[in-house]
Image 1: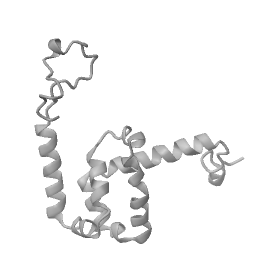
Image 2: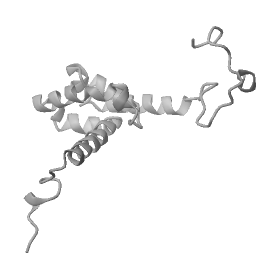
Image 3: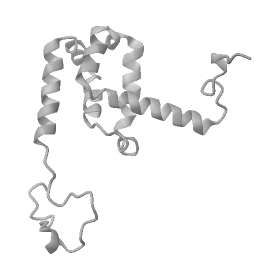
Length: 143
């Protein structure tokens, strides 16, 4: 008996949790792909960014900026680019090679010059501020 593609597990998923997880993973992957200037340029060159259905989809995806969803994003530029894609002028300008290169350079410069700020650590920090050298909130330069 041959397998019918219309009867694939994804097409017949009766488990709403599994369907939601699949949708979440698909949208997460797509939103993160927006961090890539070359991908944005490709979408623009194919006139996909001009299609009303795609523009509506980009508007729908703005919910990824909410804290509960944004925490899953590994490439923060994706959210910035999602914001920019809400504007017709940006979508139009992305067809130009100069804009692709400009975004790529800005992204590279950000990554190249990023520094960890004092007091932000991926490990468990000591509870005594004297041990970390962290200034109080009143004296903090970014406070």
